[in-house]
Amino acid sequence: MSSAPIFEIDPRTFSQDPYPDLKRMRAEAPIAFVPQLGATLITRRDAIFENEKRIDVFSSDQPDGLMTVLMGQNMMRKDGAPHAAERKVIFPTVSPKTVQQVWKSQFRSALAAILDRIAPLGQADLVADIARPVSGEALKAMTGLTNMSWQEMDRVSQGMIDGCANYAGDEKVTARCHDCTTSIDRHIDARMPDLLATPDKSLLSVMMQAGLPDAAIRANIKLAISGGQNEPRDAIAGAAWAVLRHPDQLGQVRDGKATWLQVFEEYARWMSPIGMSPRRVVQQYSTEGVMFEPEDRVFLMFGSGNRDEAVFAHPDRFDVTQDCGKAISFGAGPHFCAGAWAARCLIAEVALPMLFERLPGLQLNGDAPFMGWAFRGPVSVPVVWS
Image 1 (cartoon, one colour):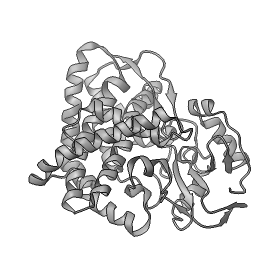
Image 2 (cartoon, rainbow, N blue to C red; image 1 turned 180 degrees about the vertical axis):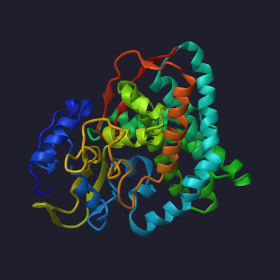
Image 3 (cartoon, helix red, strand yellow; image 1 turned 60 degrees about the vertical axis):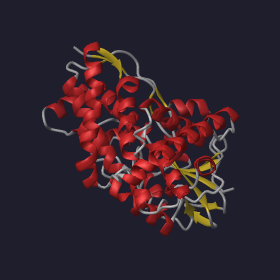
């Protein structure tokens, strides 16, 4: 175990709002072992930024990690050349060009259909009624699993996320995760013949065209689903909530003084839908007076780094005018989120502007509780419109 000082947390409180504890860690023990999480947390932005690139020390290859055990070894759990090779294979699906020429119109069509159904009702939950289905429909298109309903996409995504965070070893959570991965495999099996006959730009198709091994194809589809559903869902509903809570900043967007991309980037810094990325220490290493030992588990706390007082002018404030260029919302090193361009398009170019165009007089209609620290987002966002 690392020589980092011990920092105790209450897991329930940490899940409800991790930021007070993370602020104390940055001030008192910026690299700290948290026994309740069984890991050493790196909490300052610059330390995360630098150490994420040290793949010779902090490896993503975690053969005994929950993600690898439950979902197979995907590219996020590989380093160096193997990671780069698979990242190159999937680039035709997630490239800026493909996002703009192929996926953007499908994102717009999916959301338009949802809003056509929702708009006459005058009220909704942004999470359940809008963000969840549009994220699911977008993910169906991009993965190639168009034979899966968005409801099933949402279910299997959440089931895998819960499984990968099941450090307490709850057998029911593990069983649900296995059920979810089995469902994904069935849908992959059913789609492969069609995509073999008629290739497209979907993730499943481009990996098949590149001749990637079957196990890698399945693991990477599961990776895309595990992250590609909840993060856009949480960011769409959360960013809309943020500007509704801060009408002066919504006014800046409407007046042309700020963009929806600024809203999304600042929200992603402020609330960090992806709050943490795990690593495995592969060799003895010392930094900032802390000695790491091989097989130590380390959490790179993006959510903490994004609120680092030494980097951001107003770290705890949602402010679309502040410089968030040093945010690490999508990671910082070779594992920078491959879906970043798709996320920016779906959220900032499609979902947010369409919501406020199609739902005039949109306003909050109750509390919006947030949960999570590894993945963070609103549980519900009740709204009404005229």
